[in-house]
Length: 70
Image 1 (cartoon, helix red, strand yellow):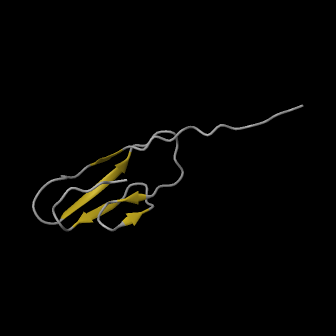
Image 2 (cartoon, helix red, strand yellow; image 1 turned 90 degrees about the vertical axis):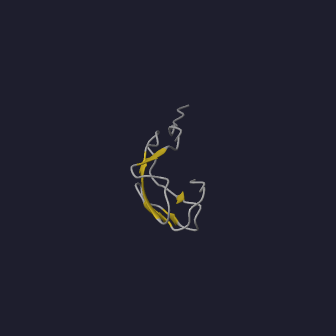
Image 3 (cartoon, one colour; image 1 turned 45 degrees about the horizontal axis):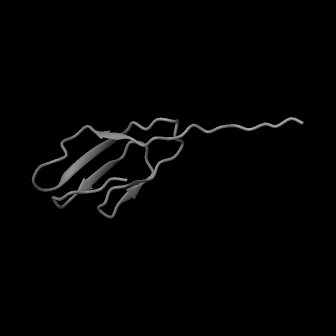
């Protein structure tokens, strides 16, 4: 009997921003994906009503506040 399988590495999500993430007024924030495990697709939810499937997205935060990025 021959059994064959392939294992997919576990993806660990991680990111950084290369712009200021605090300040007054509207903020444009650039995100850089640092995930490990070779992800092949992305779904970002910026906590401001906007989502994207880009690997390295840009988001606009019009209102000062704390946002959960998932």
